[in-house]
Amino acid sequence: MGQTAIDKMWQQYRQQQPEAPDTYAAWAFGDSEEMAEALAELVTEGKKTATASNYLLYELENEELPQVGQLNIILDGKGLPQAIVKTTSVTIVPFDEVTESHAFNEGEGDRSLGYWREVHEAFFKRELAPLGKDFHEKLLVVCEDFEVVYKKE
Figure 1: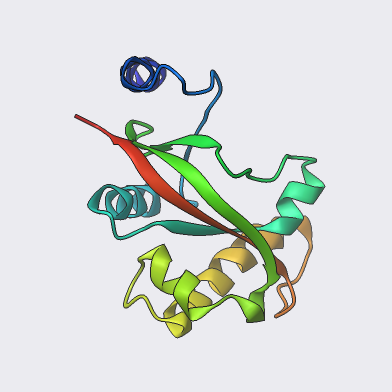
Figure 2: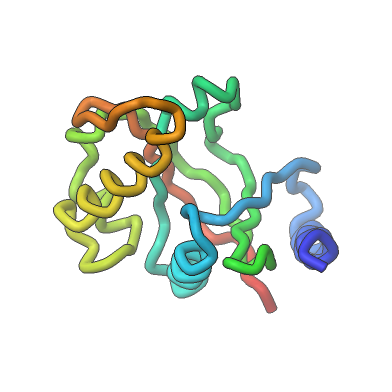
């Protein structure tokens, strides 16, 4: 059902935006159903217009970094599409240099840099543990800004 719903949303978007590229990625935020659900809701509410990810994982998995103009279908905790976002900027900075404005744009908690650091340090530690890697303040973070271009009807 999830893939069918994803395909349907993409087709609806392409009908409205025929010049859109043929490719997209579909993914959920976080590492739990609850987190994916909450963060997808923040996107559809317009509160979340940025995200951050661990650069090391891109490197280890030989995965391409996000690109400006890239389209992503944001999934909820059940794997159902909620919105399509377009990447507007990508920067790579050490964890301790992530800005207050980026933390605010992530839309989580009280939107402060302190909150952002607390939850992202815990998240990155969970990601790094199975790899036998340690978290540190200079860990490179991929900071991505995006805009919602289509929402679930």
